[in-house]
Amino acid sequence: MLTNLLDKKILRYQIVGAIGACFELALFSIFASVQFGILWSNFAAFHFAFILCFILHYFYTHENLIFKSDRFLCAFIKYVVLMYTLFFFGTILLWLFIERIGINVELAKFLQIGIITPFGYLFQKYLIFKK
Image (cartoon, rainbow, N blue to C red; front, side, top):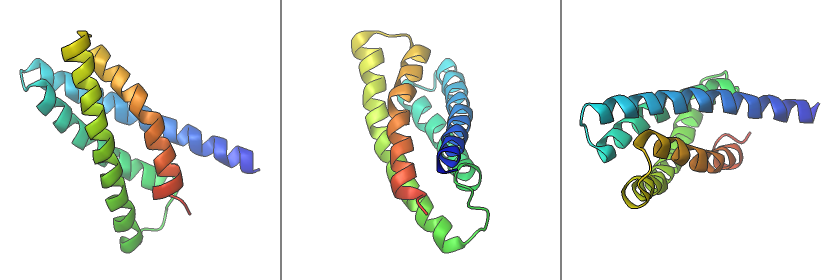
């Protein structure tokens, strides 16, 4: 029973993560293609995606079906701190991949998301949305 619940939560996290990653990558590509600049494109796409993902994680992944404003706000504040930390390290990775290594912009963003995502899951599971 516990294994089934954990598998279900991991699957939900992956679904939300895939939605968020696709959303972020699409926005990043659109912003970068209109010469918004790499850093600003990453900044804007990240913020839209993290708001979408927080709402999906809160209500879908971790099944907090009852809205309690204090619990929601506390989780949101922790989530914001985590996301900005991941954003900082992700931006450094993106800069390294594009500016130093010379990787294609979209591939660099895809790699960056792939490296950062596991850390996000572990921190969310054990620090933000724990019951």
